[in-house]
Image (tube, rainbow, N blue to C red; front, side):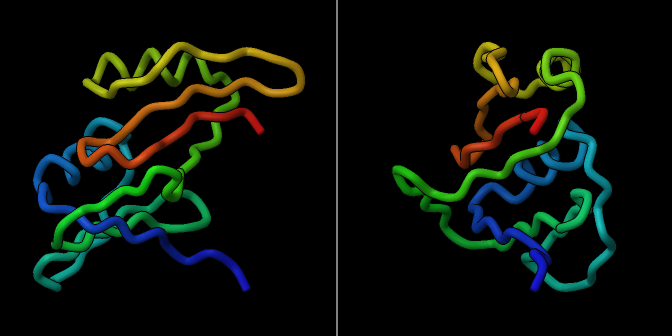
Length: 110
């Protein structure tokens, strides 16, 4: 088995599409299905499904790999993303943020 996609339900389709497409720079996968948008994210896809979002206290976290976490964070913050400070430790470096619906995302070099 391998991961195919992560589906996030959202009541903010335009804001979420802009975030994953323009801010994070993921390529949108063409689809004619109403209420559905999908973005290529390396070995898997992130899909947005129209409907109420309800991120839990410890819901899923989407982690994006980055060789240089600080540099990627700076690029994404310049595009409007919100991330906490980079935590550079041994053996790995990471940085937490949230998408417009409050779903946790992370940049990590592991």
